[in-house]
Length: 219
Image (cartoon, rainbow, N blue to C red; front, side, top):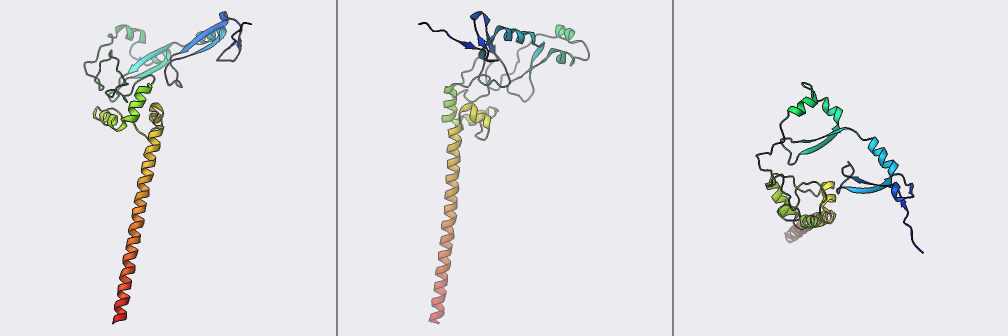
């Protein structure tokens, strides 16, 4: 007996009866998307509704003085057009110069077209878009102090065990537990040392008292 695969729309949960009613949707960017593009399945009617609801958008990269990497902004094209108050946006874009390459060497030491290998000690831990590989996570976990020292020397943000996003991004939960355990142990040792010191002081006081009592009795 043959088997029939039953498909349901990831969007609505409706049954997809035929392959010609199936649409594949790849989500490239979304505020809740963390590890890169994903794909879902939906009815063709649902996919066509997405196309009809599409907005005219402008995608711009902002290069601010203190940023290591540009900030990508997606906004409605009409809202972007209103920013041009001296001349209309279409004229501004026609007259604008083509994108030029920056003469400055980026902080991470690479050119814009060069693809860095973040699974090496040289680049692991640097801010970058896309998924953090298991190899990079392992390097960060095994060499956190060394990597943070390199990042600080390059003027790049360091990886903090107090930052929930950093902990999640690099899988540092075990490192946090270890550091917490070390801190607790140090505090216990400090408390124990204080208690021992107090006991010693008490013993000295008792000893001095005994000596004084014996001196009085002898007198």
